Amino acid sequence: MTVKLAVFDCDGTLVDGQASICEAMEIAFGLADLPAPDRHDIRRIVGLSLPQAMRHLAPDASEAQRAAAVEGYKEAFRTSRMQGRVQEPLFTGMVALLDRLRDGGWTLAVATGKSDRGLFSCLATHGLNDHFVSLQTADRHPSKPHPAMLEAAMSDALAQPENTVMIGDTTFDMDMAAAAKVRGIGVDWGYHTPDELTASGATHVVTTTQELGSILL
Image 1 (cartoon, one colour):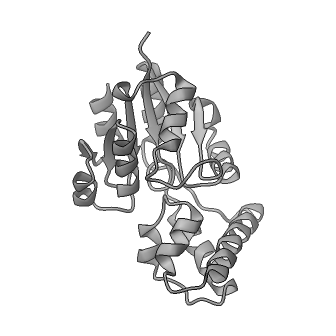
Image 2 (cartoon, rainbow, N blue to C red):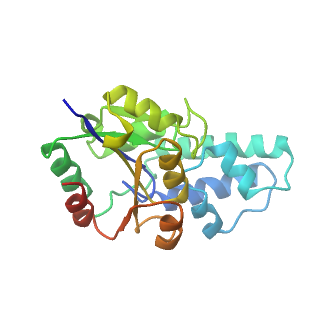
């Protein structure tokens, strides 16, 4: 039996977590005695693992400062979550899309730059834990665009690259799809532009969850 696997990015694809990400990053940079980056620049690195993100946002900082910023970000996000201040709303129509894909014979997975704790908490908040057979995070893999997360998801689902699609909002997602030899589909409601997604190899860039469902089904 052929397994059709749809792998979703999280931030910028399933949920809009930019407010909480930007707040935690600003706190982290303050703790590391670094000037806070522009929020536009922060949104541009969403999807990378934290060490990679810090290299992009603070290229002139010392390794010690970047390491302090990584730990500061983790602590800031953890505190925000404990206080119930994390904002990660689902994008419009996402639950209906996931249900539609499952009913249509697709197996679902997630590949994200989030930590295990961050992803599990996010999915639990929205009651989505049981929708996905594989959850791959930056805790256990190299940063996107390395193909390790996609390869692990395919292994978990017993899916082949030709029957797998990566769905995401950034060039990191599309580059990871290319590295894993799977199809990449971009969404235009996240943090990189449609032109950038197309240039990175997206076969489609969709504007609604309904359009995404129509392409896959």
